[in-house]
Length: 256
Image (cartoon, rainbow, N blue to C red; front, side, top):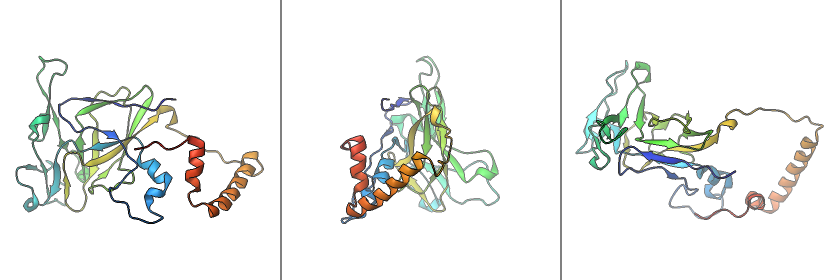
């Protein structure tokens, strides 16, 4: 089976677009043994799929903390406990983004009027005012029967906004994906390109997994117990045993 490929179809020009995730999650790695980057499962998870950058500069903060030159607004629906903070966005004419809206042109052709697409939008229920949407003005297209799972950043420090998980059938879905974010208790500030979320690709046949329990008398159970004992013995001799075994099974790791 070949590696999955996602194709991005931009709906506006000059966007900062998703890129393959890297196992390197921070620029400076402390010296000495035991850092998280030496854990192969940690780095393998960090490099899954692609990172989704913020397409706009936006934030949420108290009015006196708002940066100069931006536009501010609140959700039109207020909860029983109003938040004095305001959202802000910066125009980006290069991406046809003005006044918290993209202008999607040439849909379907050059003679069609522009279609507005929000940058930030809200839910119309008072009990969901702790959430907001960040719109991604492009279409995801994966191979047939491959879905895209949108997740919080994997093993990376974010800016404080929580990302709700969502599974999208991106082999056919023809609308921009909206990330659902939760408001943090403090201020929130994103610039264009800051990582917001992670996306990994899942064959649809793997959505549901059956769970079985191996009987204690089964061959699999006996062999696994033997393997556990061998692991404990060999790991006591070599701290990086997992990496050694992984290379034996999969070959040398790819270079960044």
